[in-house]
Amino acid sequence: MKNTVLIADDEEKICQIVKKYLEKEDFNVIECSNGLDAIEEFKKCSPDLVVLDIMMPGADGWEVCRELRKTSDVPIIMLTAREDEIDRILGLEMGADDYVVKPFSPRELVARVKAVLRRAADKSSSQDKKSILTFEGISINLDTRKVIINDQNVTLTPKEFDILYILAGSPGRIFSRENILESVWGYNYLGDARTVDTHINRLREKLATASNETSYVNTVWGVGYKFEPPSEGKK
Image 1 (cartoon, helix red, strand yellow):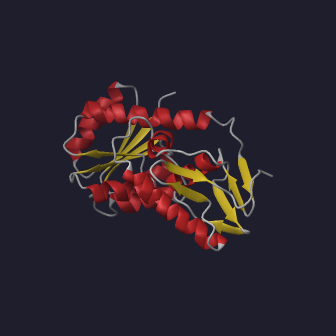
Image 2 (image 1 turned 45 degrees about the vertical axis):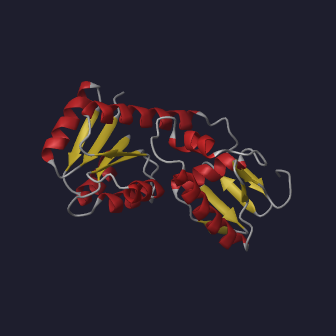
Protein backbone atom coordinates (compact mmCIF):
# COMPACT_ATOMS: atom_id res chain seq x y z
CA MET A 1 0.00 0.00 0.00
CA LYS A 2 1.34 3.43 -0.99
CA ASN A 3 2.14 6.04 1.64
CA THR A 4 0.40 9.39 1.23
CA VAL A 5 2.30 12.65 1.66
CA LEU A 6 0.54 16.00 2.08
CA ILE A 7 2.61 18.98 0.82
CA ALA A 8 1.61 22.49 1.88
CA ASP A 9 3.59 25.24 0.14
CA ASP A 10 2.41 28.37 -1.68
CA GLU A 11 5.22 28.06 -4.25
CA GLU A 12 3.64 25.99 -7.00
CA LYS A 13 6.99 25.18 -8.63
CA ILE A 14 8.31 23.62 -5.42
CA CYS A 15 5.12 21.58 -4.97
CA GLN A 16 5.32 20.27 -8.52
CA ILE A 17 8.99 19.29 -8.28
CA VAL A 18 8.58 17.57 -4.92
CA LYS A 19 5.44 15.81 -6.14
CA LYS A 20 7.29 14.53 -9.21
CA TYR A 21 10.14 13.07 -7.16
CA LEU A 22 7.85 11.55 -4.53
CA GLU A 23 5.61 9.95 -7.14
CA LYS A 24 8.71 8.41 -8.75
CA GLU A 25 9.27 6.70 -5.40
CA ASP A 26 5.68 5.40 -5.38
CA PHE A 27 4.12 7.89 -2.95
CA ASN A 28 0.63 9.33 -3.27
CA VAL A 29 0.89 13.13 -3.11
CA ILE A 30 -1.69 15.75 -2.12
CA GLU A 31 -0.89 19.44 -2.63
CA CYS A 32 -2.12 22.55 -0.81
CA SER A 33 -1.13 26.18 -1.32
CA ASN A 34 -2.16 27.57 2.06
CA GLY A 35 -2.29 26.50 5.68
CA LEU A 36 -6.06 26.45 6.15
CA ASP A 37 -6.49 24.13 3.17
CA ALA A 38 -3.75 21.90 4.58
CA ILE A 39 -5.67 21.47 7.84
CA GLU A 40 -8.86 20.58 5.97
CA GLU A 41 -7.09 18.16 3.61
CA PHE A 42 -5.40 16.49 6.56
CA LYS A 43 -8.79 15.79 8.13
CA LYS A 44 -10.08 14.32 4.86
CA CYS A 45 -7.18 12.13 3.76
CA SER A 46 -5.23 11.27 6.96
CA PRO A 47 -1.80 11.31 5.24
CA ASP A 48 1.16 9.29 6.47
CA LEU A 49 3.44 12.35 6.48
CA VAL A 50 3.09 16.14 6.10
CA VAL A 51 5.57 18.55 4.51
CA LEU A 52 4.87 22.11 5.73
CA ASP A 53 6.30 25.38 4.45
CA ILE A 54 6.60 27.91 7.28
CA MET A 55 5.56 31.00 5.30
CA MET A 56 2.09 30.37 3.84
CA PRO A 57 -1.13 32.40 3.47
CA GLY A 58 -4.18 31.52 5.54
CA ALA A 59 -2.22 29.89 8.35
CA ASP A 60 1.55 29.62 8.54
CA GLY A 61 3.45 26.38 9.10
CA TRP A 62 3.71 26.96 12.86
CA GLU A 63 -0.08 27.29 13.17
CA VAL A 64 -0.71 24.21 11.03
CA CYS A 65 1.82 22.13 12.98
CA ARG A 66 0.28 23.24 16.28
CA GLU A 67 -3.23 22.35 15.03
CA LEU A 68 -2.23 18.91 13.74
CA ARG A 69 -0.42 18.08 16.98
CA LYS A 70 -3.65 18.56 18.94
CA THR A 71 -4.99 15.30 17.52
CA SER A 72 -2.20 13.49 15.67
CA ASP A 73 1.40 12.29 15.88
CA VAL A 74 1.70 12.18 12.09
CA PRO A 75 5.33 12.79 11.01
CA ILE A 76 5.91 16.43 9.98
CA ILE A 77 8.80 17.92 8.01
CA MET A 78 9.08 21.73 8.06
CA LEU A 79 10.37 23.78 5.11
CA THR A 80 11.78 27.28 5.45
CA ALA A 81 13.78 29.76 3.40
CA ARG A 82 15.62 30.89 6.54
CA GLU A 83 18.50 28.93 8.05
CA ASP A 84 17.70 30.24 11.52
CA GLU A 85 18.35 28.17 14.65
CA ILE A 86 15.34 29.76 16.37
CA ASP A 87 13.06 28.60 13.53
CA ARG A 88 14.48 25.09 13.75
CA ILE A 89 14.16 24.84 17.52
CA LEU A 90 10.64 26.32 17.47
CA GLY A 91 9.51 23.78 14.88
CA LEU A 92 10.99 20.86 16.78
CA GLU A 93 9.48 22.06 20.05
CA MET A 94 6.06 22.19 18.40
CA GLY A 95 6.46 18.55 17.43
CA ALA A 96 8.00 18.63 13.95
CA ASP A 97 10.13 15.58 13.14
CA ASP A 98 12.60 17.18 10.74
CA TYR A 99 13.53 20.52 9.21
CA VAL A 100 14.74 21.31 5.66
CA VAL A 101 16.11 24.68 4.52
CA LYS A 102 15.33 26.09 1.06
CA PRO A 103 16.77 25.79 -1.49
CA PHE A 104 17.03 22.05 -1.08
CA SER A 105 17.69 19.03 -3.25
CA PRO A 106 14.44 17.17 -4.06
CA ARG A 107 16.36 13.92 -3.66
CA GLU A 108 17.43 14.99 -0.16
CA LEU A 109 13.81 15.78 0.78
CA VAL A 110 12.67 12.37 -0.51
CA ALA A 111 15.43 10.74 1.56
CA ARG A 112 14.26 12.69 4.63
CA VAL A 113 10.66 11.61 4.00
CA LYS A 114 11.70 7.96 3.83
CA ALA A 115 13.88 8.27 6.96
CA VAL A 116 11.12 9.92 9.00
CA LEU A 117 8.55 7.34 7.89
CA ARG A 118 10.99 4.55 8.74
CA ARG A 119 11.51 5.96 12.23
CA ALA A 120 7.75 6.27 12.72
CA ALA A 121 7.28 2.65 11.63
CA ASP A 122 10.07 1.48 13.95
CA LYS A 123 8.47 3.33 16.85
CA SER A 124 5.02 1.84 16.25
CA SER A 125 6.42 -1.67 15.82
CA SER A 126 8.31 -1.57 19.11
CA GLN A 127 5.21 -1.94 21.22
CA ASP A 128 6.68 -4.76 23.27
CA LYS A 129 7.34 -1.96 25.74
CA LYS A 130 5.01 -1.59 28.70
CA SER A 131 2.07 0.61 27.68
CA ILE A 132 1.72 2.12 31.17
CA LEU A 133 4.59 3.09 33.47
CA THR A 134 3.56 3.85 37.06
CA PHE A 135 5.67 5.31 39.85
CA GLU A 136 4.89 7.19 43.03
CA GLY A 137 2.68 10.12 42.04
CA ILE A 138 3.00 9.69 38.26
CA SER A 139 1.49 7.50 35.54
CA ILE A 140 2.73 7.52 31.93
CA ASN A 141 0.37 5.89 29.41
CA LEU A 142 1.92 5.09 26.02
CA ASP A 143 -1.37 4.14 24.36
CA THR A 144 -3.17 7.38 25.21
CA ARG A 145 0.06 9.41 25.47
CA LYS A 146 -1.17 10.90 28.72
CA VAL A 147 0.81 11.76 31.82
CA ILE A 148 -1.06 11.94 35.12
CA ILE A 149 0.55 13.43 38.24
CA ASN A 150 -1.44 13.42 41.48
CA ASP A 151 -4.66 12.84 39.47
CA GLN A 152 -3.87 15.84 37.28
CA ASN A 153 -3.35 15.59 33.52
CA VAL A 154 -0.02 17.11 32.41
CA THR A 155 -0.04 18.45 28.85
CA LEU A 156 3.21 17.61 27.02
CA THR A 157 4.31 18.10 23.43
CA PRO A 158 4.90 14.86 21.47
CA LYS A 159 8.67 15.17 21.84
CA GLU A 160 8.43 15.91 25.57
CA PHE A 161 6.29 12.80 26.03
CA ASP A 162 8.72 10.66 24.02
CA ILE A 163 11.67 11.87 26.10
CA LEU A 164 9.84 11.20 29.37
CA TYR A 165 8.71 7.73 28.27
CA ILE A 166 12.22 6.72 27.19
CA LEU A 167 13.80 7.94 30.45
CA ALA A 168 11.06 6.45 32.66
CA GLY A 169 11.33 3.12 30.84
CA SER A 170 14.77 2.69 32.44
CA PRO A 171 14.64 4.53 35.79
CA GLY A 172 18.07 5.37 37.13
CA ARG A 173 19.80 4.81 33.79
CA ILE A 174 21.76 7.81 32.53
CA PHE A 175 20.95 8.83 28.95
CA SER A 176 23.36 11.13 27.11
CA ARG A 177 22.01 13.89 24.89
CA GLU A 178 23.09 11.82 21.89
CA ASN A 179 21.13 8.79 23.22
CA ILE A 180 18.01 10.92 23.52
CA LEU A 181 18.48 12.52 20.08
CA GLU A 182 18.83 9.12 18.44
CA SER A 183 15.85 7.64 20.28
CA VAL A 184 13.45 10.56 19.79
CA TRP A 185 14.60 12.36 16.63
CA GLY A 186 16.40 9.46 14.93
CA TYR A 187 19.88 8.75 13.63
CA ASN A 188 19.46 11.04 10.62
CA TYR A 189 18.62 14.14 12.63
CA LEU A 190 21.10 16.90 11.77
CA GLY A 191 20.25 19.38 14.51
CA ASP A 192 22.11 20.46 17.63
CA ALA A 193 22.09 18.36 20.79
CA ARG A 194 21.18 21.53 22.69
CA THR A 195 17.59 21.06 21.56
CA VAL A 196 17.47 18.15 24.04
CA ASP A 197 18.30 20.57 26.87
CA THR A 198 15.50 22.91 25.76
CA HIS A 199 12.94 20.10 25.68
CA ILE A 200 14.05 18.67 29.02
CA ASN A 201 13.97 22.06 30.74
CA ARG A 202 10.37 22.58 29.65
CA LEU A 203 9.46 19.00 30.54
CA ARG A 204 10.91 19.39 34.03
CA GLU A 205 9.05 22.67 34.58
CA LYS A 206 5.73 21.04 33.67
CA LEU A 207 6.34 17.98 35.85
CA ALA A 208 7.52 20.09 38.81
CA THR A 209 4.51 22.40 38.55
CA ALA A 210 2.07 19.47 38.60
CA SER A 211 3.89 17.56 41.36
CA ASN A 212 4.75 20.48 43.66
CA GLU A 213 8.47 20.59 42.85
CA THR A 214 9.29 16.95 42.00
CA SER A 215 10.64 17.08 38.43
CA TYR A 216 11.38 13.31 38.17
CA VAL A 217 14.09 14.07 35.57
CA ASN A 218 17.52 14.82 37.01
CA THR A 219 20.66 16.16 35.39
CA VAL A 220 23.90 14.20 35.66
CA TRP A 221 26.40 16.97 35.01
CA GLY A 222 28.70 16.35 32.08
CA VAL A 223 26.91 13.12 31.18
CA GLY A 224 23.18 13.50 30.54
CA TYR A 225 19.82 12.88 32.20
CA LYS A 226 18.03 10.20 34.17
CA PHE A 227 14.54 9.50 35.51
CA GLU A 228 14.32 9.20 39.29
CA PRO A 229 10.94 8.73 41.00
CA PRO A 230 10.65 9.92 44.62
CA SER A 231 10.82 6.28 45.80
CA GLU A 232 12.28 3.37 43.89
CA GLY A 233 10.24 0.60 42.35
CA LYS A 234 7.56 0.31 39.77
CA LYS A 235 4.08 -0.58 40.90
